[in-house]
Image (cartoon, rainbow, N blue to C red):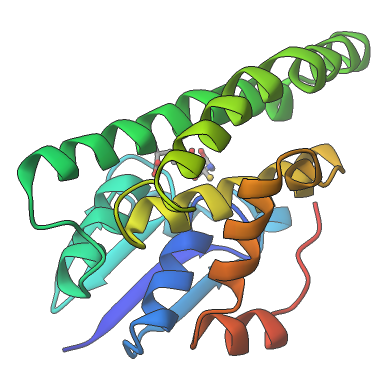
Length: 203
Ligand SMILES: N[C@@H](CCC(=O)N[C@@H](CS)C(=O)NCC(=O)O)C(=O)O
């Protein structure tokens, strides 16, 4: 079955999906668009909500990064079988995205003074608020958000990398359990080889 992932040549919401597909050894076409040339009209117009990522499988398409990640997880044994555990993992994914929505405001802010003030708020407040909670949940479960490795662990690693890229920091350095998870996910078979040969992203 032909699989394609459409996303930017940037380490953002599509990256944990790339990681999962590589980890699962799934063949897929990694279609990357140059973010500096965006919007590319013939691509944007073809997207259901004008945004990436978009996943294609056997002629069907799916948008929304979390829906894509969760679907792939269900195919490659990264989704817990138990409904309660699934819901807990879904909640973690949404908590991670609540954090990320603050960074998106920063990325989109064009006024340099407001941007700098907002960055300070992210660094001094939001990161501590969210990452101390992620750290606590990971510690409670032997280093994963669930009982074992699940799709949301990949999502956190993606958001850590995107945070670092856009804010110019190493957020995981302040949070040792997050750091351990990042190292663990990046060392997984398939992911490790992909990380070693991917072109470093820039913004
Ligand atoms: N809720 C969507 C958000 C998608 C999104 O914000 N995509 C951004 C890139 S990370 C995008 O396509 N930006 C270009 C645009 O809006 O034209 C998801 O999780 O997939």
